[in-house]
Length: 187
Length: 72
Image (cartoon, rainbow over all chains, first blue to last red; front, side, top):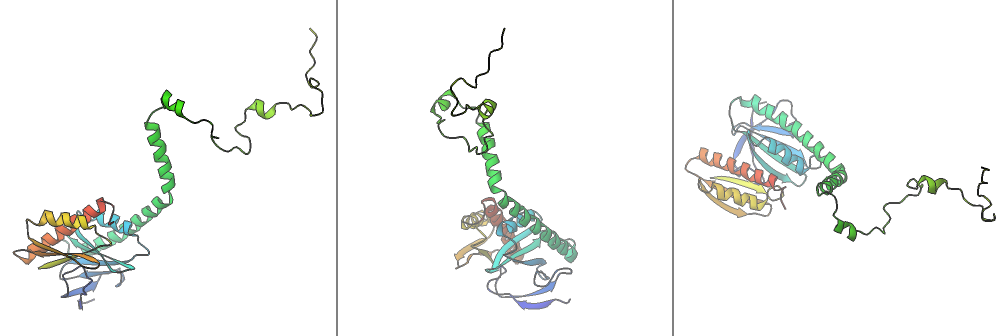
């Protein structure tokens, strides 16, 4: 597709209000990614409801050593990422490869973020246990101050009962005391 | 002159300031605030230099923002 000239708006991260030639990138929808031919940079627009900002940061950070990265929010529900390769070798195919890599990285970062959110409570619990374990056993003073009166946990099924407590013979309520006592065997 | 616009939802103001302080020795940098953006104007002896310094400044501001966990 031949480059076309567009007017960059005030909300653009570029120097305001000058014309740039943009073209689509093969394999990517026009409203998702396009190439600024003059400045040799790729502009990727993302739906903010699909990609959290944390994923955008994660993906952008991966490219910070190879590219100049600029983020923007042109609309409340839209995020924009502008990638300018530091090396101009490779031309448009190199930029296209970068955009593909960025798209993959975005999906990966978004998924990692989702997993972290879902397992946050578990991660915090494990971390707390690890920190508590690293602190070492309690001292005698700690034990002395510890309140043992609280129930450690609920045990509705009686799992924590000892064998003797659970299976002890119960005396019949109307039986005379000592009636259930086993008879002594003769010597 | 090159103008960089850092959206307040995406960049931390302190990080943009730190980047401006770091690169102020390489170009004339002026800053201003808009409703949604921190704006940095880069002026240097040549357009290529402005481009390079602006790009490096933007990367530095982004790196600091990511390191600090995003904007407040």
